[in-house]
Length: 454
Ligand SMILES: [Zn+2]
Image 1 (tube, rainbow, N blue to C red):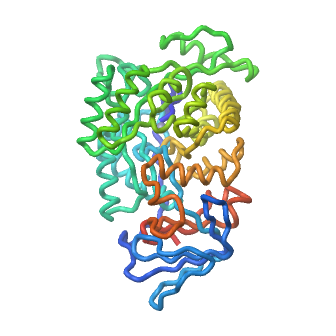
Image 2: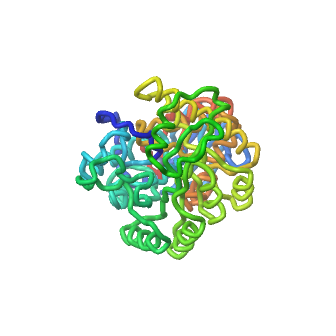
Image 3: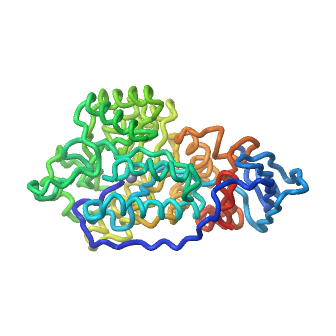
């Protein structure tokens, strides 16, 4: 999760209006989906009309017209476009709006798990059929239970890759730094201060069911006047800088300290390879991003500041940047004071300028929203923002679906509408190549051959 510094607000429970699927098992009879259009995401070809034959949990055939077995259920979706299910590569099922308050301290893990079940439903109903849960923020391996319950058809939700808790240094980004030490408030992540400790934590998380490791590699983040000396992690210095008024955006610079060295991240990636897991880092800027790219992480999340060297490495190695604009926009629009809003907007403006450089440099992207601190089920906004700030609609859909499938290690299984793939399919109104915001208004959702929203 991205953090806003030193802001603790009252808890606002989010109420999620939902339709719940009756059954999570695929139909025993074939289903034919018919719509005005079908997008072949890899090529950008638009089939008009588009049809998909679904048998069990898999796609059997795709075309402008497909075989209609006599016992098939025909679903006519009218003036919509059929797409693969959306993939969110950065979510927090165990957070709800108000994440900068004390929810991770006040709420029990069982209660948070109930809310996570609701969050998983909301995301699925919004068209997200696969997600990477980037840390339970203190709920340990409770995401293993959510993933397994979804896989067993007990509750509706996306296919999940889960990390359990994230990994963080003592006094780091996710530690409970500003509490009375005598109260021993727990970190939202698992501590690791050395390469050996990272490996031990990864083994513990793997034992508890994790699919990958999430590592906090930077923080706290600051917008400071250009030429300011770094605070080197000193919290008093950082608070003074955060308290200053941003002026001309060009005059302000982004600073963030690294948490792990290149060698420590390399140890994590090597252990991940042994466990058949990859590593995603929360990483806002340099030099940490370069450390992460050299270490061969799978994704650099937030990726606000990337040097030319880092961008070249990411392009050469296929390391995905996951910008998470939606959370930055939400924080900027929901800041508690005008001063805080000005700082958040300065950060957002900086991020947009850097994103344009990243697009021009050919950095590969996946799509992740950091949903949780803002309401689950609204995160398709991320695709709209990536188009607004410089990418073509087709490129964003390819980043979401094709790159997202790779990052979640389901490539060849999801992310495209092809025979043999899992039947994870959505329909959106109109044509998303003309107006990407169509993905914010999903009309139909099928996951694993099961219609969950119609
Ligand atoms: Zn996050």
